[in-house]
Image (cartoon, rainbow, N blue to C red; front, side, top):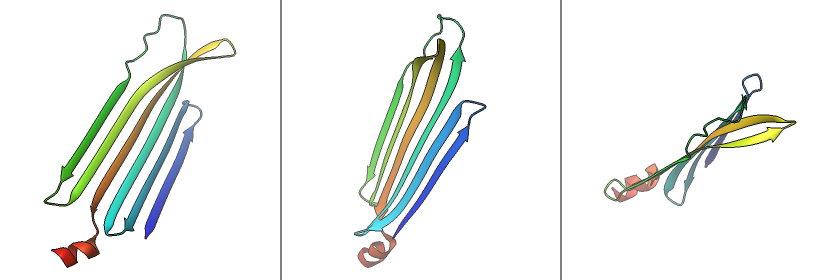
Length: 112
């Protein structure tokens, strides 16, 4: 069984876009939940002396063999500056990936 959820939200007045997806699947005794989230914001920059924020990367991996669970989380933040028709813009983005793996309920009853 597999469930998919996809969201695509746009806010053109604010220069913001959000894309999110979630996938839940049971396959070969493994229950997996995968969530992805991507957001970006575009801002007009007046002048050249703008400080760019530092990129950011965070990764977490957790494994619990007793509970038979695994968890992976990754978050990336960054920004890019671009020129369009002589105007300078800053594009800030955040991307997250969240994965949870557990033993399927059916298989857990048989083993436990």
